Image (cartoon, rainbow, N blue to C red; front, side, top):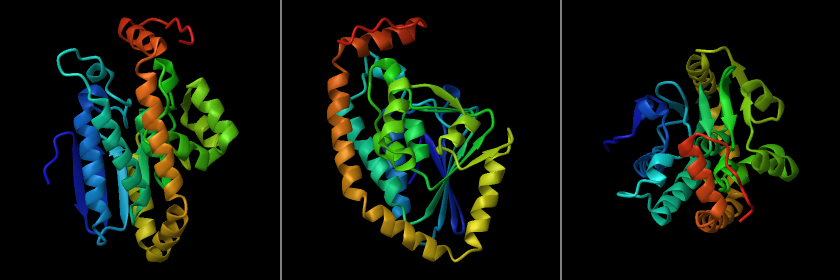
Length: 260
């Protein structure tokens, strides 16, 4: 299958999914969200692949959702369609019968950070910036962000992180348990390739089987969270705070939220 906003590279038992909108720091428009869901569902059926690396082309992993498309008056983002693709993406990524490695450089924000957290191994460069920053535009995390944060750090810390929306350097994120390895700048992709080769030289079928057992037992919870995120996101899109957050973002100023 040909893709416009991503690349799928196959290399024997290794596959790479590359976010490929470098001119906008791999901001995810509706096309990219659909293509990511499609490619992950494609890989789910390919048992010849045992390791999948996710990475971004250009200066960043992903700056998150494409806000310009959200506010485009001529071709606005269809939230009902987008949220279905985001849910497909999250479920496919969580249930992949491969070991997944997130190779993070630059920014990994919003939905981009949710995707990173869904991976089995997270390698981030020292200068990488990670943020669950939906709160900045009056939204809630999606793409299973609530679920994946809770899996990594538990409910109390997940709430703190979601509510604060802070941008974290890689070492701080590692301290929270959100990054598994901090790499020198410019080396995340090399480190990820090395990790992939190391995994492929182990009894990886047993590792994949254990992943399947652990993840299958939590799958219904993930589905439930995705439904709740969809409902909440649709509700938040109608709030005054969201509209103010978007307006402030476009005008490059601090938003004045009112709790409405």
